[in-house]
Length: 330
View (cartoon, one colour):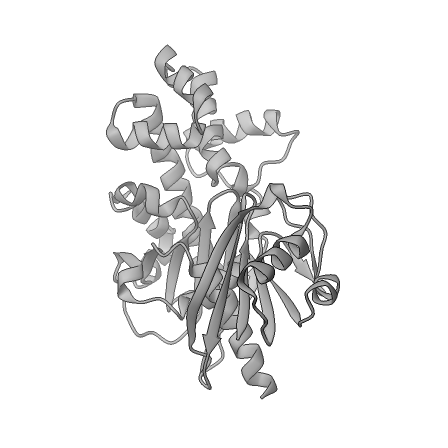
């Protein structure tokens, strides 16, 4: 038995999984908690175990932030997460991995119904793969092909420097550099808050007009959801332009990762935003930016690109990682 968790900036999703001698997994229970309502991951895990009267051979948690030597500080939570402390609290071994590493492990558990393909590419190519996921933040990871299986590895590439590709993106970068004290990461553009940053650049530089009705909606609700909905419903020109810029940047950075890790086996687009804007991703804006790598365009056209629709991919991936760890010890 495995306890798995996907711990993000706003939620902690936990599950119980059974596994077999091939590290296949089957979920038997799950629950979701508001992360900000708890002092730490140990308290969440303890409540989950008490509610389900559960015990397990191992717990594996995917954490939204860097993980080093069994410790993590979630990027968007005031928690200190220590595997040894949690293990003592709940009485079983605990493994911590980055949440995008968990997503990467989860790729192996997905079926065709869990994905939408943006580019077929050349299927069946042996080699590395990549994952990018925009949500509360921006996560990136790779899958190294060792000749037999893919081995996920983590990255904090979402916090690397944003690169402008067009005059308009250069103007946006200048605007954001002033706003964010001289440094702009990809996450400042490719995240829920990032979409709002793009929108506010257009509004504040008079490249788009914000109506009073739209401004009021954004005060009352999640601004990023308002912007994406208005863009997809074509009720606001400034929102349409903001989502176009966001989508193009998303495709460009996905292409950057594909080049960096030589992801000839495939690029996977995960996170909470992609399924909500799937029609925009299918429009061609994303893929054109992905392919636009100059002399390496032919390579980019051969890479399969898939959007992950299954919101439990990171949870399933944490369980898969735990199952492989048990398999190593058996």
